[in-house]
Length: 198
Image (cartoon, rainbow, N blue to C red; front, side, top):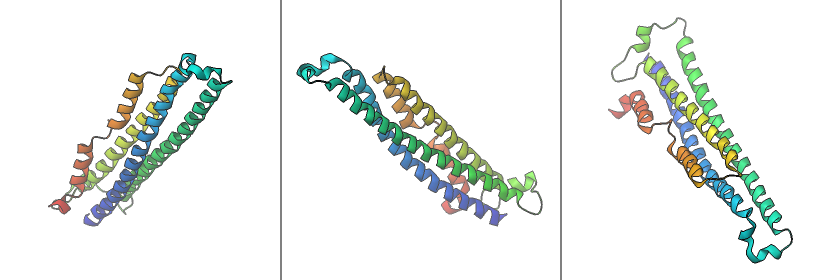
């Protein structure tokens, strides 16, 4: 049992690396979302001829400015799509870690009983704690990925009628990461690595 707990702890270390990648992707997405929001807010201003003043006499200025902003918007969308692909990759890695963790329990010569799964050796976690922890962390990050995906896709609906309030609310949703309570994540890691804390 102790050897299996150590294998699970290795999986949690790998999971921690994936979570660090997630934080990098999250920072990048916030920056990209901020840039994209600024472009979306400008589109409304750019389409109002009164904002061109004396530049109205320059032939095709409105179309040129709008075209340039649309190019920037397209580049922002591509950048966000790449970042969302990185999030998806992290979620898939977490899913693989969970599947591998389940396989550890099933991979032996005989099935472990519920009692064996819940058995503790000193302060070490039980195998059930390890499996539950992996599953809960994967579910948190998967739910957060789905939320981020819906936030990013809803931004396209605001292109032509941008609202500073809506954009701000969407950005705050991204900042908060509501499906990943840091205390819960830390609690799971504290349980798994209890003997290292003591």
